[in-house]
Length: 245
Image (cartoon, rainbow, N blue to C red; front, side):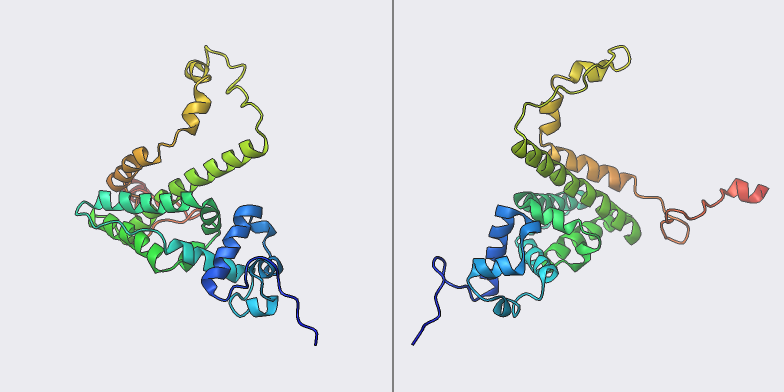
């Protein structure tokens, strides 16, 4: 009686954790763009039909991957100083995402942050709560978080792309700011030889406290109704203009 040939190599996986681990291996090796449900089925040693019991489609796989990874972000110990609590929470997010840059790239998808799991949302709640303790409105605290978030993820993505470019094209780095006029750009001219080294230095942890303190000291301006004006809204008249008009 003929038997079904068995896959040589890794034994078939059966758990969600094993499937997500296999997906991570494929992403790290080939990139997210190359990952398909069929390739994941081959990697895990199970049929695509069986795999669909765990993962509905590629979008669902992305959400599961990020949820699983975000749950690994360590929750910092509580601190009485709101600024330090914000700094510690942002640093925890940064360090976890920097360890797997694909996660940072995925989370920057529009609206994705609202679909994160409890662990990541707890850190966001920590930042917003701490900001309100300094006198900010909840709306201002959201903008404080957003600014820190852009700074954190942007720093990671710039480094990832720079590393990727250098890895794929290991040619010598071209001279920074060639052909500058020293009279017009004296500092850039003098710093040009050091620029690549200075630009590559990781100063995130050193500069984050300064950013947090600045945001807490100078929060986003609010309208009298407590709402932040949207881009394109008419600029309200000042009291003097209103009286004159």
